[in-house]
Image 1 (tube, rainbow, N blue to C red):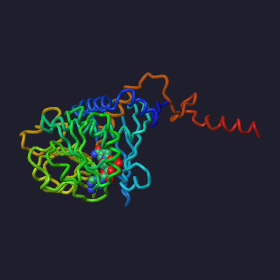
Image 2: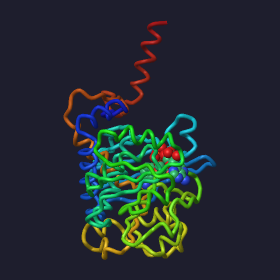
Image 3: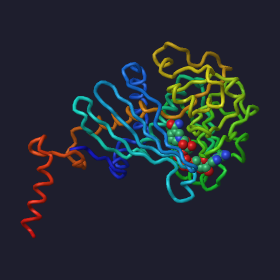
Image 4: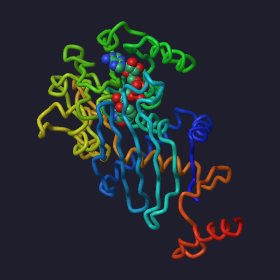
Length: 346
Ligand code: NAD
């Protein structure tokens, strides 16, 4: 039987563990999984595009476990009362191919995206960073704030969203979290004086959320919202001035901010920074950019962390996702038995 973590189950677990420890737990897993990069089967995600959005499959596997996530990206969805990003995923055993866990992954994606962003920033942002600007205060935003406080010590948030209702929601959600929150009147105002800038807007367009003149020396940019062909947030000039770090170049060149740049535009892979093969931030004045698009190994890490937390628990729901006939070769018995019962009843 496959363990099933529905929305309610995961919410309860995250409440028990705490949002911050949960993000830290996933970040630990991501860091150790990225450090054994060569042990994974990797592929850019499969993406099916339509005028309103994208539906994607994100796989990853090592020798013991295989995972995939089904995820969409539909910026118009919030107007319909639906999530821009909704997801579920599976963790399976490689030795039998059997799924061990089927989980909701909308919430898990927000937690793992915050974990990846904050982890990257620990290597790339200035050590004494205390102020973060967040542009885009939707579903991902509070998780980003909490992740950055836990891993970087961010205390002050300068925030901007085109929709005042999003700003109000953000303030209410983080009211008891001890942040100093300053609502700006524009994106340039939010960025002014920030050590870190997180862009996490949703628009299926080549938007310019950050223009070149907004970015001063030493800033770390955590560019999360541009994650699809034709969907970017940064002016290309910023990418030319900074050092760009990516998860998996083969995927980021299609989906990330660097889709705006030539195919040989230089980037540094995060895993190489984590293992010490490549430098992270080199000087206090350097502009560092994490061109985040989300990668399958991060979902693998999140599902593995989740599975470790719940393994052995008796109180979880289980699904009969895979048949269990008495004789594995006698699959037909499952329908034959039903037919006999139906015939007897008739
Ligand atoms: P969401 O729709 O819940 O929130 C997006 C917010 O951005 C909204 O509040 C909207 O008003 C605001 N916004 C839109 N245009 C803006 C602009 N020009 N200036 C300021 N604010 C603006 O979406 P979400 O779930 O928070 O996701 C945000 C983005 O992050 C999406 O594009 C999504 O695809 C992406 N994402 C990336 C990753 C990753 O791993 N890189 C993971 C999850 C989501």
